[in-house]
Each structure stands twice: as C-alpha cells, then as structure tokens.
Image 1 (cartoon, rainbow, N blue to C red):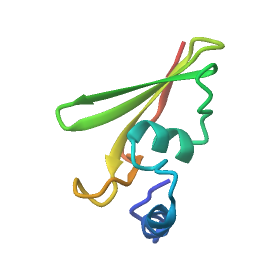
Image 2: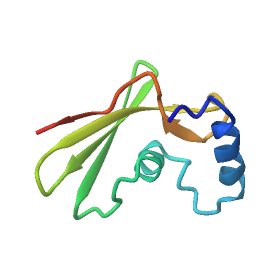
Image 3: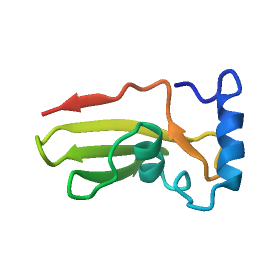
Length: 95
C-alpha cells in the first residue's frame, strides 16, 4: 500500500493522532501492525537496523526459520513519528 497516495497517509495520520497505544511510533511495531504480522515473540522475532539513513525491519519466523524484511520510513518526515512501510522497496522472504 502506498500511504502517500489517495489520502491513505492522511487517514492513517488521523488514526495515529488519536491512538494511545503508540503502535505506529516505532518502526518494528508499525511494520508488524500494518503488514498484519504476528507480534507474538514466541512466533516472530523482530530486528531493526538503521544504516545510511534507512531503517529496515526484519521479521524472523521462528517456526520455519524464514525471514522477511521491509524498509520503513517516516511518512511525514523526520519530525513526525508515524512509521510506514516504504513503497519503493519490496518485502523479501528467505529460508
């Protein structure tokens, strides 16, 4: 989903502003929530890597050993804490 297109980002931002759980404030929790990936630590381990101004979240699926990574970005720039998957990068899955 491209959150910068067709008002999706603005709708998500409105939800974010009224959300007290803070789930979209961190790249790993936002990625899991928006991509519908389990947040159960007995099923999925999350790793966040920041390098050269890019943030990547990797999910390690403990049951089968697979991995999926996605680049994350702050939708409205560095001054905002709303994290979304970056649409220009594909999620990849490996065993």
